[in-house]
Length: 85
Image (cartoon, rainbow, N blue to C red; front, side):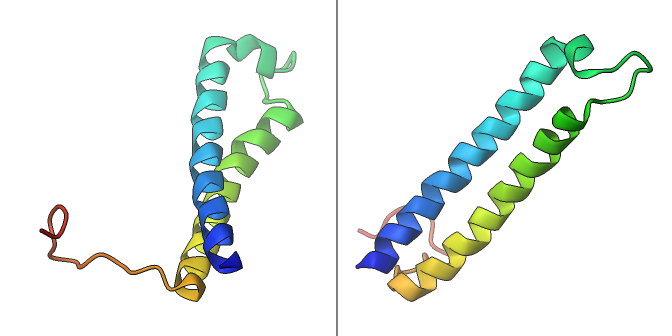
């Protein structure tokens, strides 16, 4: 049962991290000057968040796949379209 809760946690964490990465990218596009130094280079904090958020989302996705196998959550069939009826 704990594995299923961990799977759900990583599933939500993956989506939240992807949304945060997209939101930070949009914020960067809207306020580009705030993320640049006087030489036109990215600030270290901007580089960190632009690298960390997508990397953490991919890592959470890998952990989600691992926990799905441990929790015994069934996979959908590859040729299945829609729900079983």
